[in-house]
Structures are given as C-alpha cells and as structure tokens.
Image 1 (tube, helix red, strand yellow):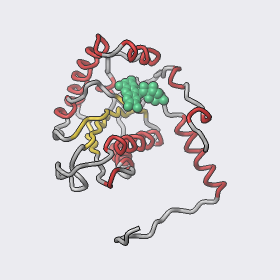
Image 2: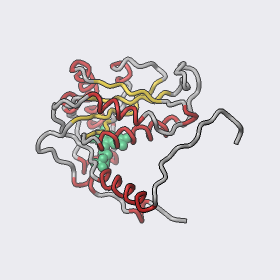
Image 3: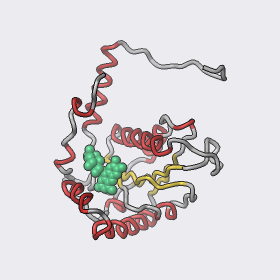
Length: 223
Ligand SMILES: Cc1cc2nc3c(=O)[nH]c(=O)nc-3n(C[C@H](O)[C@H](O)[C@H](O)COP(=O)(O)O)c2cc1C
C-alpha cells in the first residue's frame, strides 16, 4: 500500500458464537421483508427516513464519489404528480410496450397500471444515480461503478427501513425520466427507483410467489 493519511481501522471483535448468532438473527429479520403494494396513510416520523438515508450513504462505492441522491417526497402535490406521470407510463407499458415475456414474468405478482400507493404512502424516496460529479458534486468529474454503488446503497436503505418496522416497495416506472423534472434534479442524474415507505394498509397481502426464494445450495457455490 502507498503511504497516505490514515486512521486506525476500528471494528468490534466478536467471538465466533456471537458472530454466528448475529448473522443468523439479521438473516431471519431480513427474511421477513416483503415488498408491500398496499399502504396506509399513517404518518411515519421523518427521523426514520433520515436515519435510513444516512445508513445508505455509508455504502461502499466507486472511488468514494458517493454517486447518489435521495429526493424525499412527502407533499401531496408532488406525490400526485408522480402518481399521474407513473400511471401514464405504466398504462403504455401494460398496453403494449412491455414484451409478452416480461408481462408473463410479472403475472404472478399481480401488478397493474394503478399505483394509488404513490399518493397514500407518507414518503416516497426517489433515488438518483449521479453519472458525474465526484465527491465535490461539481457535475463534471467522472463517477465509477455508479449502478453498482447506488444498488448497494438502496439495499442498505431498504434493510434499515425494514429494521425500523416499515413496509417498502421498490417501484420502477418505465421510463422514469419524469422523476427528474418533478424532483428538480439536474440532467446528469438518472432516476433509478422510487422507494415507497410507510405502514401497510390493514388486511394487506403479498403474492405467494414472492415467498419462493432460491435455497443456499442454488445461489452459492463453494470452491
Ligand atoms: C429494481 C427493482 C424494481 C422493481 N420494480 C417494481 C415495480 O415497479 N413494481 C412492483 O410492484 N414491484 C417492483 N419490484 C419488487 C419486486 O417485484 C419484488 O422485490 C420481487 O417480486 C420479490 O418480492 P419481495 O421483495 O417481496 O421479496 C422491484 C424490485 C426491484 C429490486
């Protein structure tokens, strides 16, 4: 390693038993997360959203440029604008833009062009990927591994919100350029997803299909 300005690496050293127990316990809590598509309008404290975004902001990322921006929408006017534009895109998507194969893949989830949750849920976190900007956000410096970095950050965001007992939905209207205008973000930022956050509506259900997860033997190989 080249010599550079550095600080000690600090990490609590756990014994193996504690370490295993912690990993398994977090796994079990994460296993309970399900994408929710029925939200109530019950308010959620802003502090939870702030903490989750701060957690996301600690994600590993290309060259530490932190190429993300989280536009947090709660105003009824902007939520309505997002819903109207998203439903317009989704109508086109379901009415012919999406391939037969894609629609067949979505069928077991029961999704359609109606997105009432974009107005009922208290918070919409619109995630933007910064193609340029660097750590100073100058809008010019090249960023690296942008999609990978923002994807990891979104995982940490969703995991933190789940840990806080909130329901989330990862929503990706296609295309979603309209989000840049509604959220007043610059041209070099690409909208990546809307994370809908709130409490589930009473009686909310999830598609049984979502419970089918590939087992460890299938998703891993040990070499
Ligand atoms: C990148 C991405 C985009 C998604 N887009 C949508 C979407 O637009 N609408 C929707 O209802 N669900 C969407 N989902 C949720 C997936 O359908 C869901 O995660 C998957 O069916 C597994 O279910 P689970 O999250 O409950 O485990 C998306 C998920 C991801 C990661």
